[in-house]
Structure formats: C-alpha cells, structure tokens
Image 1 (cartoon, protein in one colour):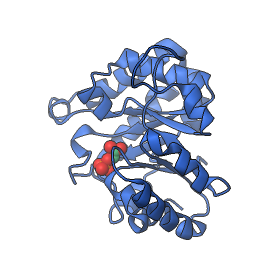
Image 2 (cartoon, protein in one colour):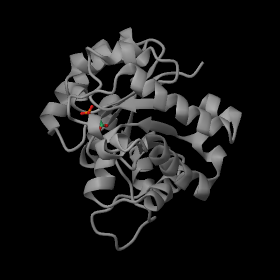
Image 3 (cartoon, helix red, strand yellow):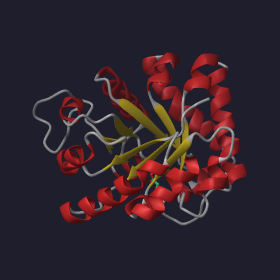
Image 4 (cartoon, helix red, strand yellow):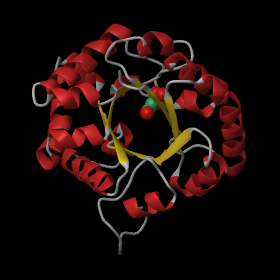
Length: 250
Ligand code: PGA
C-alpha cells in the first residue's frame, strides 16, 4: 500500500504573522491524521520560520521551485543545497505556473528533477494538460511527454525517488475540479505508462491529484485507487480546510 501524501502549495501567499497562525492551526489538528504524510511548501523566504515551527512535528516542508545550478551568479535563484540547509524534504518542479508564466520547458523541469534528486530532496514532478489540450483529446500524450523528459534524462528508476502530481491546468485555482472518474482515468494511464517500463516503480510512486481539491471534494478523489494524495493550493491556506483534506486521506 502506498502511503498517502497531502502537500500544501502556498504559492506566493502569506506573511510571517499569517504563516504562524496557519501552522499553529495545522499543528493543533494534525494528531487526527494517522496514516498519511502531510507537508507544506511556503514561499522560500519563509522556509526558516517554517522549519523552526515544524521541527519535531510530523509535518514535513518543502520549496516551490529550485535552480538547475549549484551556486554562483544566478540572481534571484535558490539552490538545492540551500533547501537542504533548511531541511526541506520536498521541492515542487514544473508546476504549471512555472511552465506557463516563467517559460519552464520539459527539459528544464527534468534538469530540476535531477538536481533535486542528486541533492537528496524529493522532487514533486507536476504535470498536466491545458483545457485546449484536453479538448483536443491529447491529455495522455501531454502527460506522457512531460514524464518522458525526466525518464530520458534520469532513467525510469529515478521516478521512484520522487512524487508525481497530476494537475490539470484547467482545474488549478478555477474551482473546476476534475471529477473523480476523470482524475482516476489519467492517474491509471500514468501508472500503466510507468508499469510498462518498470512495474516496481509504478507500484511505488505516489501520484497526487491537484487542481481545486478542497474540503468538500477531497474524500471522493482520494478514494480512487490510483490517487495517492493531493497537492493543494487555495484550500491549503486555511488550517481547517487543509486538515479536513488531510483527514480524508487517512
Ligand atoms: P488549487 O492549486 O488547489 O488552488 O487549484 C493547486 C496547485 O496549483 O498546486
């Protein structure tokens, strides 16, 4: 059985004060979450505060992005070693906002996956189709292409060191969740795609769903056989909503 993972992606939201309140709330309720792992991904500048508030708790933390480079003249970038310095466990790579707003292509995302893995971080590889791609009927081709960029660079076994998050772009931040059946269909496709190359990897890798998952719809999504957790944006900014999703995961 794969353990479920519920990760909050706070995106560019919060302040020192709001983050303290949010983490206090999550810590209070986390005892009810027995079997699943919970993680939060704050803006990088708050990683130190998050680390000091969560050390010793069962909640893990991670970053939303990292540089492909190790160090040097890369203004504004953050290296994997810096994330390790703050004891991050996870780092998102290739979130659709990075892909669409900051021009990250499959090859860059694959490199970030490789750099994170080499540093001992667990990369969360975000993939998913746009509305136009879904309407064109090419969802499977898109997610296969996004995964194969990592496999081409790193080999199939590398995927087992990370997590995959399937996030249909049309569902992110829109309130339009994929139906449990729609999500399960793509998750099963991804699992099969991996299984055709390495059955053990397919069995092991957690595939999260992301895109308007909330307190009301989480239980049904998380009950699907190939949905191993959630990557939560908006609903991760309210402790009670986030905890409801974590409890639904088990
Ligand atoms: P959302 O974001 O839950 O607000 O749709 C999810 C994500 O982008 O990771």
